[in-house]
Image (cartoon, rainbow, N blue to C red; front, side, top):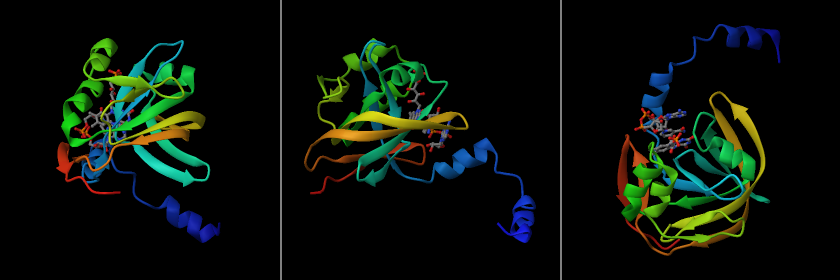
Length: 176
Ligand SMILES: NC(=O)C1=CN([C@@H]2O[C@H](COP(=O)(O)OP(=O)(O)OC[C@H]3O[C@@H](n4cnc5c(N)ncnc54)[C@H](O)[C@@H]3O)[C@@H](O)[C@H]2O)C=CC1
Ligand SMILES: Cc1cc2nc3c(=O)[nH]c(=O)nc-3n(C[C@H](O)[C@H](O)[C@H](O)COP(=O)(O)O)c2cc1C
């Protein structure tokens, strides 16, 4: 990089605060997912909006997981997970898996089958991505889990659930 460019970067204002960043992120609509895992370290799941597609070859998505979450050691131990994207009629599950609720109570609120990796696959989800974690990196408070998709299951034309402005919104189902 040119010296002049480096000096310009150094003169940029301080980064935005955590709260200003969150206020800004509240303007970004996102799908709502329950990310699950199961194995020797036990069964665990949490709500995540920080999920996005990375590559279609190999099929890969990413999940950002806070290292301070109670579920973090469980996902690290298993190196596999299932991303279950919620439909509009599953808002209550999002709150359950996004709060401080005990794990057995979270899973008791829905029906599950077992995915290829052994992770719990949510009945009635818009789509489920069964994955192995191919690698991960840490940025700030979170681990970015890069997940290779081993199997998918989808449901047609259900109303989608969107998180926007710190609230849930329904989107009419569409043929994909
Ligand atoms: N990426 C994450 O870790 C997210 C965590 N949450 C959790 O749910 C709580 C409630 O969230 P909101 O009602 O939306 O209000 P909020 O003001 O705490 O968050 C607003 C937005 O900022 C982002 N955000 C929140 N916490 C974050 C974090 N620790 N790291 C990176 N981005 C973050 C998300 O996009 C979120 O929708 C949050 O305080 C947080 O504990 C919510 C959304 C994303
Ligand atoms: C709408 C919503 C979206 C969330 N998205 C994320 C996320 O992308 N990554 C994350 O680490 N935590 C996210 N959380 C927070 C976790 O779901 C929450 O920390 C966890 O379920 C509770 O963790 P605990 O087991 O440590 O109590 C989100 C919470 C809510 C309500």
